[in-house]
Image 1 (cartoon, rainbow, N blue to C red):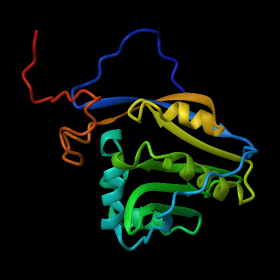
Image 2: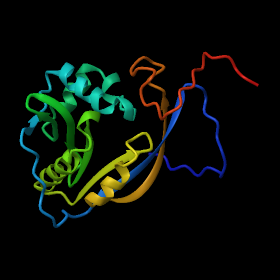
Image 3: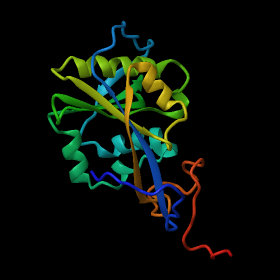
Image 4: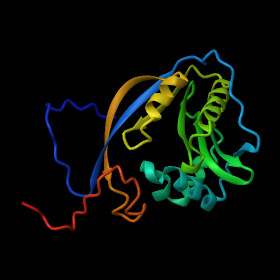
Length: 208
């Protein structure tokens, strides 16, 4: 990963590109608190790596307005390999038989563990599920011989995400910028997805 030493100031991106400000956070020890249980009727289910359609459906449901697109543009072979890897634990949070959230832990860089994906469908936010799901994530991560759990969030994420991670016991340690093509212009997300991120179509006429 390159470390940039840019002069202070503004930089114009080419139309069709997005820049994402990423905050990396880490947890160096398991927090000394009791885990909050999931409400009645909710449960965690391991993702079936052969059912990519169902996985991408909940991935889209959770992440469409957060500019999640990596697993939507990924080949089936690569996605199946990630979800089926013995050091990846990928789950859906279900209300009955209906997925309403995602949790994924990546243990491939032991003794570090990455909280790779974490989120709830919009309709499930606000019912205390996020705290219970995070407590499950922390329990599962620290049940392994790790010495560090880390996660990243960004300004495309829910506005409360950074504070939520910090209240959960994560501490920010780095800022990064990521430049990528706008997935809405490529057809991977609807054009009205992530309305808090301006859509600048390179096909529109230049204005003086």
